Image (cartoon, rainbow, N blue to C red):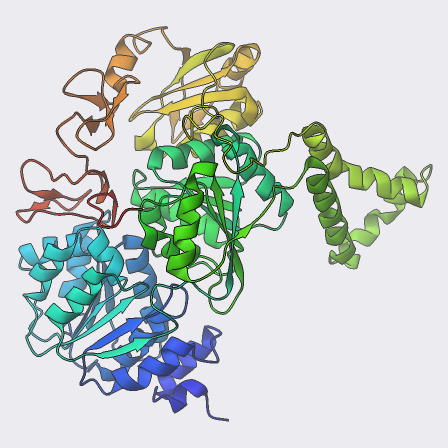
Length: 634
């Protein structure tokens, strides 16, 4: 029987690779676009929602059109973030595994530029790149695009929204005039329409569904709560969905880290993904999430772009996005590849108008849902446990040897007693927590406690806590979640006993409840990390306390500073530990190709990589930019 991809014109070698990946039937966007793109004679605009298979829609035709006997760049794919860059490159490598001499290179910030240059020099036909790093390499005159026949602009709306218009112009000016340009986007704002007009000649347009609408496989719900109850509402939603595998979106990297840290302390399997993480840290977080070793990924909008993880059950909007179109991209993390998903918004009564606006934009009705009661959560958790026990796979060969001892242990218990006690192991934990759980649902117009989204949840002071110094920090590849686990495991304390964690460069501060401080000191007496002794001191003891250490760490003062987040101990920007610097009021911050905050460039006009030096071309991005000059607000 002929494979459907073969009927579209894809060769056997590529079809076999696609089948090995588990894909048997083309998605609608693939079915409609592949025959058009295989002709190789037209510019193309494809509008389809995230998760509908756009990478294969342009990737499979590229593999048919490129001459792999020639080891020069023939196709350039531009995308907004390094996660998406890596995803596209990996997909193309998998699709072309049976094609002789096929070479795909991913070019993105936050990684060693010299390694990327070596791969380019060795010969490549397809370059997948983020705009900032691509400009760096062009500035070094390290790549020749004279043989490029096809340029793909993926997630074009997001690239424009992130301010890459000038970068795209500069990059495309180095490619031949007779190339074909393929543009793919989830939404079609005026800026994308303009880019199509500027770069293309009478393009073929394909729209799957209605422009800017949401995925039909996604249900949209919203919960109205008071601002001070938002974190409690998040926990209740998670507890009511025992099998949840979700991405939780926050507005800022600070909120992202804060929510993740609180979830970890409360016993949830969560971690944060934002622009302050190094590439190694980001890779570690994403690997855990892809392997489902993590249940909740807390992310900012830009950091989550390019996340292509199957079977995400929920997207939770802890904060609504600033841009209307961003909601489409957020919700597109679930309901992928024909699966169903749920997008949840946790809002206060003042934000109801934004929900109505979203309904008009995506063309779908939101369901107003009620947060479950404590009893509902306990019941759901209990029967989830019962279901797991009923359906667990029993390894008789291994368990049989222990059955006699198990039966002896339960000899004085009836069958009913055994069931009750087993169920209570998990049930009691939720019963204790939710025994007096309040109703978190707020009525429309109830504006009590709407003074800020984070104030109540994070307002716990330091009274009753001891502040400690530890000689480990971000240069040791620690996130706050990693540090929390490290403290709990070695100090033999529970996460709820840990207060604020202030991660610096080469050292950090953290708070623990007064009655467990001695236990932490005892637990860290002989702990080593990477061959060196770990030192714990009371903050204020020795040379790195509240005086020396805090001044070096940049203090706790936060202020606006021209639209970017400012953390400084004075007026001019403070150093945070081992060379990490958060700038003062005038300068933006750039680390490993990540940019968050206002529309700043480095004052020198030069871009910097973690390991690869600099170029004279100004750089907007090294994979991720958060904040920036946004076009369309609510």
